[in-house]
Amino acid sequence: MTKPTGKLTSILGVSAYYHDSAACLIQNGKIVAAAQEERFTRKKHDAGFPNHAVEFCLRQGGVGLRGVDYLVFYDKPFVKFERLLETYLSYAPKGLGSFLTAIPVWIKEKLFLRTLLEKAFRQVGNFEKKEKLPPLLFGEHHESHAAAAFYPSPYEEAVVLCMDGVGEWATTSAWVGRGSQLTPLWEIPFPHSIGLLYSAFTYYTGFKVNSGEYKVMGLAPYGEPKYVKTILDNVVDVKPDGTFRLNMDYFDYCTGLRMTNNKFDAIFGGPPRQAESTLTQREMDLARSVQEVTEMVMLRLANSLQQETGLSNLCLSGGVALNCVGNGRVLREGPFSGLWIQPAAGDAGSALGAALNVHYSYLNQPRVCQGSSDSMRGSYLGPRFSNEEIETSLQQLEARYERVEDSDLYRRVAEYLAEGKVIGWLQGHMEFGPRALGGRSILGDPRSEKMQSVMNLKIKYRESFRPFAPSVLRERVSEYFEMDTDSPYMLLVAPVAEKRRRAVQPDLQKLWGIDLLNVPKSDIPAVTHVDYSARVQTVSPDTNPRYYQLLQEFEKQTGCAVLINTSFNVRGEPIVCTPEDAYRCFMRTEMDVLVLENCLVLKEHQKPVPKDEAWMNEFELD
Image (tube, rainbow, N blue to C red; front, side, top):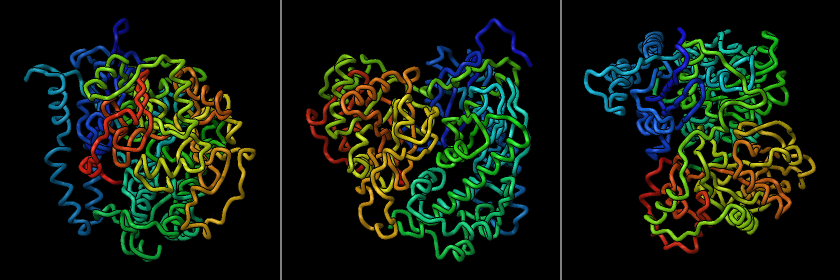
């Protein structure tokens, strides 16, 4: 089907009802706006219909819902229901409890998702009862992932690899993208899933599935790969080409309400760790082992896909593509000369993929590549606030602030950072995806020996082992890290450059139990993980000029072109969206300075806020 030209064509994509609901608007193929619902509702991983995200996208595009040409949902619920039923039937009579829990929800809501979606769209667009909605289309889950990976990429042609927990049936799929077309190559079906394998170890090490996987990745360098052989001999069979099969005797996710079972416990030395209990060497070794198996799969699949297609570029999406350690190895050791990863690689980004797929595949529109850059606009696709709006908010909050011109702002903030102060930084459009990229960030001095533990324990209220990411001027990246490529979305891990290291790798077994974070590891210890790695974000003036100028000023004052960059939130809370969100988080943590565009707020000038236990307790500790 081809849409007549000469008219602005608006397509609204939505993901919802599972986790991380989101909305995206594209107009004539251009990505206009995208945001996750959690940022508006302040409910982490909000799965409800994204009313607020839809309303924002429509405002940003200057169009009402009546002016939208197509609505599109990111997957096909009937196919997913088919997989659910077939799975239960194949394992019957096991899994009756899980079946009785899931089926009523499907019969009541998800099986009739078209009706549910139409009702939600009518409400958000204030449609009359008999008024006709724009056409509602449904994408396929992995096709939406693939479209989100390929269409915004800078490549005219590329291999696309999608890996997640599960879509309708597929858990891993491979595609070839050429021009405006995506062609499927093959897929691995449920229940065999590298994403669910990683989630099983997330569950087993005491973290929450669908949100704690990155903690396992951060914990892995503290361990040894002691369980790799056990995993490969018993749990998953990985072929030389990277394809794999899980031994379902060790898992309960098909029939039960937990990820693993007693047989899994037996080969790994006991029951799962209780959430919030002390981490032991066993959890560290388990994390390292499953991380190595995941990297093995990623590298083998990359090699076999390049041999199969002969193409030189690779695009990644799906939740496994957020494994930036594995991504870094694929870049360094894999066969592809070009690698691009969708910054919103999880289900939220599939709202974007579904919309792009309608534009290019359904409407058969031509695609023009950006050459050296992608079309994600740095992933700064969410709301932004003017200085006037910020001042109004601060006045309503009775906050004391001053408005500062740019030249003075960068100088003063860089001075505060060099003094060891922690900065809350809200600038420009909010980021789309799970990473803070200098739009909604907490910043610190990476040269400080104590900054990592201070920010973890006093600002983020989270586990002290968690590493922080460095933001670095793009032209300086190879001076600090063993890489020389763009990494604007903080999705690649690279070693810290040898010349920046200044300590021998410690004996972790002997040192565990004391404060490892105070062991000097490099010139930038606060962003150097225990294995001398770092999750790098390169900053360029074309996508975030204000953050770039701050980094330049910090380098001018200190000689260091790197800053700590972590998301502007506390543990269990979504990244802040509005100036009000930012001020609230700022006042209830030990941040020193808040910068909202050109408005400068110093903690020492504010009225003290009483300790708000209800605020601290309302967040889900994941």
